[in-house]
Image (cartoon, rainbow, N blue to C red):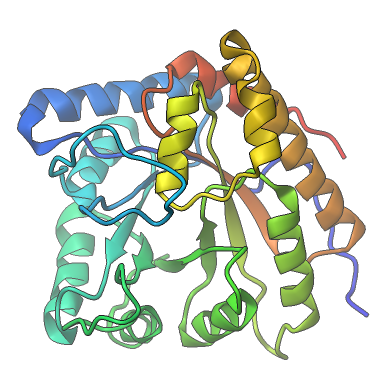
Length: 306
């Protein structure tokens, strides 16, 4: 039987996901991104900013659609350096590790620490499991960084897709290879992560430190917004979508209410089951989500009580 773990309903870490601007917007785009982070930090008190690496890719689901063409984005480490220098907020950057061979990949991480001051990374794999890539797999890259790159206070995280078959075994393998935290895919259903936490807690290996999870929650404002999330592979039941979009003027309000209850359910479950894993929030305003909506969600999540 697992020992009880003291837990607060307040997220252990409160993180904002900030997508890098398009390259074509130049310095003005970077300035706008930094200003938006500053505005949200002033309202919410962020612990970190999580910056994804955006590549052109195929749809992960046939149920959604992308309306805008892909445009190249600023490197996450470039935006992170601006945020850390000007706002003094630590950044987590995502890195797709399969495109550079082992030694060049290690050089990239060393440079990112030494010249950009980044200490925390989320390592991401290739788009297709059937394709051969020149670089290491995610577990291989975890081990590479753990054994060959000494960053004071450095942390290596990976992506978690709770609904994916065999995900617990994947997480165990990644933990053994050096990962210490996971950022989830955007979630709309608490059961996806609570079932995973239960299974992982029951199978924690002796001597293995329980990982932290950043639970990604995304507010929505329209049916079009939902279709894009589906295109990205986000799991959202048709019943929930029907309820969210039943009143066009109330989509945002309903999504905030639903995410508030989703986080409450996750927290209550973790407390009741004495989950050894710490839980943080990764607020992911994907698409043209107003800052006021992001602030409203953040404040609602902070107010959750068990």
